[in-house]
Image (tube, rainbow, N blue to C red; front, side):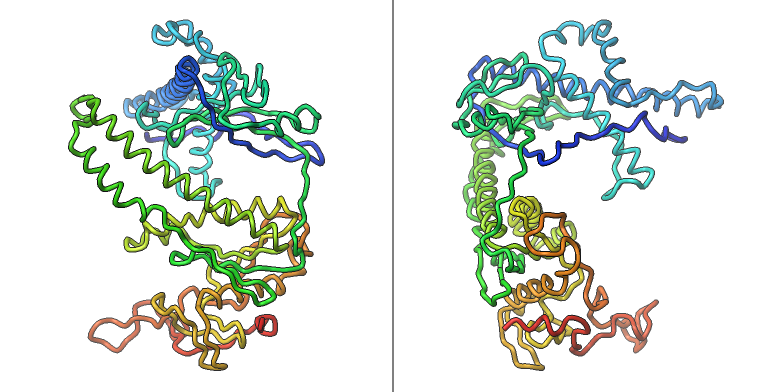
Length: 496
């Protein structure tokens, strides 16, 4: 679409703020719905998707009409007015359309109003994010226009914020229009916490993922801090593919958490199931061909393998990240460029299987739960190339070299353990910044590079057949060919 687009959609919505002494947490409960509940869940999630698609068409219709009128030479003041995408405006327009639209009028009363509100709220949020991205107010990659959700690809989900929402007993949950649904697990401790009055349910989102239905409860509960066993200790964590975590604490102890490589272990089974799926008659969107029953059964078998891998990975990450904040008061991690790392076609599969971003996310909120602090080292900090004993930085250290050897002091150490020691030293170097004392709750502290390091430490490439430098290079750019000594914090890098 050519021409300007609306700068905003209405008043800014205020987010929910927890009461003093409380915080908002999420609890995910697996469901065991019967046949009637399954049909009702699918109907509500489908209604949310239809409402989302209706809102996208409703807003984009005015954009397309204005673009057409612009090509006709219609003045801007005489064109079709912009349609607001704020949630109140979409609600008002949808409530009028559901009585007049022949498609919506037939079945809209079968589902709760919360289903349609879920789709409209998601559409309003999508248009807000798109507008902020165009204005440069949103971080990350630039977003495109909201698009229609496919019934085949979209994840079924529906959010309930009003109406009858409660845990009926230790094995059942009650939701508006859906009624009483059985839970897969016993939630008696959660029922007792709600009965005592210190915990309340704010909203419930039902969604289908990994082959089963879940109810995600957004709850407000008392903020209780479980102190770490060693609040004065710091640990540096180096992430890797061969070994998932290499932890070196401020006492000099080094521990490792192996990478189970769940996806690699399931590759043989995935090849067999994928071969079976390829031999069946699958769907074809171009010709409108529907998949055969045998294809659906074979695809379900293959999906179960993917779901099992995802569940095993999630369980292993939670177990690994739960022990670290419970023991140490300060956790130091790297700021890895995971999006850039997965571009390496030789390592992308294993990097994705390691889930570095998920590790960072879990460590962030679990550290706050135990009243600790999380220090994020600068992305360009040479943690692997810096000697943890004398502070000399090596000019080059390829990934194939797994042992760090210092030419200055003679230190010989595993490169991941050496990086862990350097990361743990940052806790002492930044003890007077951020939250101050290890054990105090607070947000993650991003530590800048301690020595003003260049982003590239290799020598500048020369043009082929000439002795001149690459175009644009100066004698002080990318010409580092020898080891150098760390300029700041050297006395705190000597850990052992």
